[in-house]
Every structure is written in structure tokens, then in C-alpha cells.
Image (tube, rainbow, N blue to C red; front, side, top):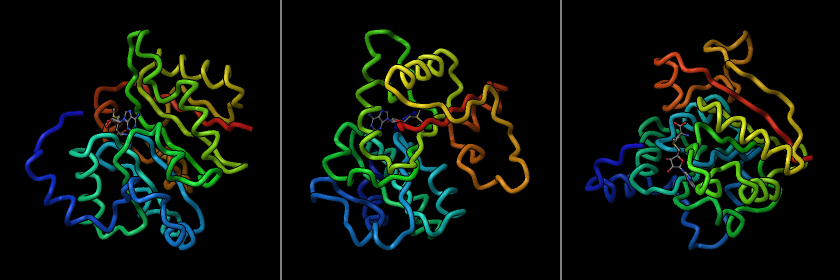
Length: 216
Ligand SMILES: C[S@@+](CC[C@H](N)C(=O)[O-])C[C@H]1O[C@@H](n2cnc3c(N)ncnc32)[C@H](O)[C@@H]1O
């Protein structure tokens, strides 16, 4: 993802400050959690296109975005702020720190959308479907919670499937080409909400792979 407009970051952060949580402040506030029926998390939320659409469709759910780069997440929060979306929160951090501020077994769904594939073998550990990351998601998900992954990258997809199976996850649903139009009544499901990266890949006629898995 291209990183531009660093000079505007302080202004963007200030405008959208109500949508941010700083992990240095301890645990994610319980009053935010209590105000909603469910919590859902996107890891590597980028500029937040997916989260803002999901939040607009599901007002009784609180959507949390974790993103490691401040310039990118500042744009995500600005987008949500400009659209007057209130049921999103953004956290700038590496997901490996998530258990230090998010309550265990609190997430109904965790989304990994178009995660960086890190094609070189020595970078396996950075993949968001690596065993180390799956162990964090297992702790964060509720009993009936699910992990939803979408990618355009076949080798990353196959590697991720193997990683899920090796780590005891169960595959609930698998698509080798997600339709670009949702069937009737499914428009608001995460699988059919297109992310910023997805829109680019669809224009190039790339296949969109999807897997839903549960740790139980
Ligand atoms: C390829 S982009 C996809 C963005 C968005 N999900 C989409 O589909 O448009 C992947 C994003 O994940 C973020 N990311 C990668 N590893 C991360 C980590 N360990 N913790 C938090 N964010 C991470 C990157 O900074 C990048 O913005």
C-alpha cells in the first residue's frame, strides 16, 4: 500500500480522535464493548473501506480495525469520520500485541482481507495466517466465532489453508471465486463487501479466494 500525505497525519488524527484507541492506555474500554451486541475485527484494515461499509450495514456491531502504519490508519479513521460512522474504532499497532488490550474470547468474527502474501519463505512468520497469528485469533474469538480470509493470491491461499488445518482449525466454507454480486439477502455479508484491494484485483479479472474457518 502506497504511503503518501504524511504531513496531513496529525490533522487527520485530531479530527477523528474519537474513533481511535491507543493501546498504551491499557485495555479496550468496557463501555464501548457494552454498547454493542457484537465485536468484529479486521486485521490489516488498510484505509478502512471494508470496515466503514460493514459498519454502515450493521449498526449494532462494533467494528475494530488494527493496522500497523499510522499514515494508513489515519486515512481509515478520516473516511469513517467523514461518513459519520460511529461504530468503528481504529488501533495502530502490530496485531501481535492484540492480546495485551483486547479481551479474550470477545470477537464474533476476525477478517483477514488481502493480507500481504510475503512470498519469500524466510518471511513466512510475517504472514497473518502463520501459526503464531492463528494462536492469537484463537484467543480472541468467541466460542462460535469465525475467521474469514479473502485473497487474490493462490499460493498464499493454499499456504493459509494448510496452516489452518495444521493448527487444528476447521474449514466451514471455501470459495475459489467469490462472485462479484451477492445472492439476494447476502449483500451485507463480509464475503461480498469489496475491500479497496479487492476492487483493484477485480478490475484486473483476478480470482478472489475465500475461506471461513473456526478454531473449534
Ligand atoms: C495488502 S493491504 C490490504 C488492506 C485491506 N485489508 C484491503 O483489503 O484493502 C494489507 C495491510 O495489512 C497491514 N498489516 C500487515 N501486517 C500487519 C500486522 N502484523 N499488524 C497490523 N497490520 C498489518 C499492512 O500495513 C497493510 O496496510
